[in-house]
Image (cartoon, rainbow, N blue to C red; front, side, top):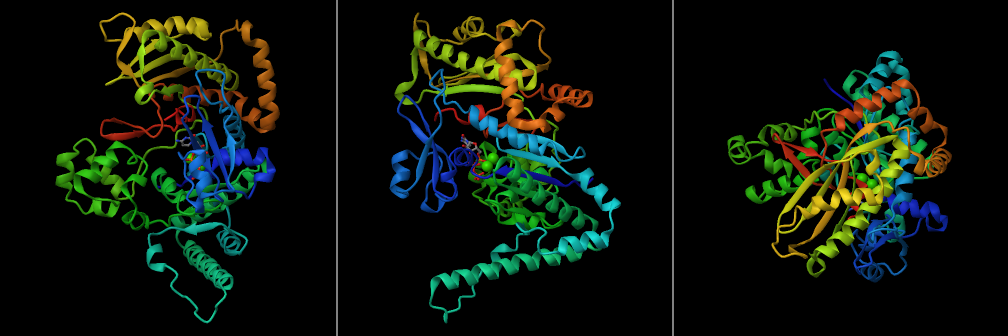
Length: 525
Ligand code: CTP
Ligand code: CA
Ligand code: CA
């Protein structure tokens, strides 16, 4: 069955949160810097005004000042524990966005893919519009110049269409640039109009066009309610929607005409495909010395299936532009994690240090879990302790309601962590630890009745959230149907135990694309 999927991704999200906090920063080059007490600091978000200077994520304040002296640096607030940054304000901003996305139409399935990104399955929504509305009226509306003002068609033909028309009679560079912009705009419009004409007799095209119109309105609504700009991609599956969303950023959207999927993929680099951004993509590129999906597709299938037998079926589909991963209705994270890296000389080599950092991380985790409990009225059942020494190991600990307090949880986690210590010498941790992470998961809906110790705090936080998100989020969260749906989701999510940034957990040959969990995104490198 053909589907219509929209991916919404916020533009330079954390930078926009800072710009909204300090409106004088709108329109200026802005970098969001995460500072760490061990002296490592780096940018985690860069506004589009700073990007032409070459400023990139990961750079230090010094590096970006050299490239862009006027850049305004905003610091991520420091957290209380374990030298962690406090990203609560970005999470709150994310909730505001999701409250808007979740309130638009009950026929749309919404999946939170990361802190600033959501998939929306619009199939039912557009199909009911196609069958319920007058086609002539739709077409006339879509053809109006005010419709689809920021939409681009991505069909793989772009390279050949490069603008070569330089008018040498015009000496003034500004005028030349202006004319170039105008040519680009009229080309964009022409392609859109040609596509809309096709919609007269092609339902698949019409559905995509209606989804693009929907995405334009949705982005306007997000802007109106939150002040944030975003971009979107529209395609017939998650992979295509995600891929083309990045084609025209920021503040724009792109869609793939039905049938152009393979054309789009031809020149796409392997690592920009959802599911191939990690180890599998790198392995394919290195093994076959290929860079693009086109090159990958030209390899004989027998070769692929010889060397990547567990992945070949999934790869064959992806190379055809097919991806049947469903949009899973969920607006909450399936795991909440905290972690810290101890690179090089900072590696932990004593039990005392190990316990010190575990304590800090446990406190931070409890803080996040408490916040999650208020927002989502649920409790974690599992906590995974993950250590990286010369190898990576993890152990899962069952936890109950009573454990969600710093000291109780620490006493539960510490023996587990100790049991992962290999060295024979008391007090020494050898081989040393490069990373400690804790990840809470398998959430169970509902709260135990005796929650006295945090009731006051919870009520305060609930009021804050309600004020911030307005009534729309309350509507979504209340009502039995919503609750049932939420239970179903949590059950579905129970299988997802490990969710780390960008990492791909391979199971049965299909790379499971794990949520970009913001709590893990900012693990200090
Ligand atoms: N983020 C992070 N650490 C990373 C990746 C992302 O903290 N390794 C945060 C960023 O601060 C960012 C947000 O998650 O603002 C969303 O990430 P992403 O969508 O990849 O980038 P944006 O900054 O939103 O920029 P773009 O406009 O290119 O999407
Ligand atoms: Ca983004
Ligand atoms: Ca994103």
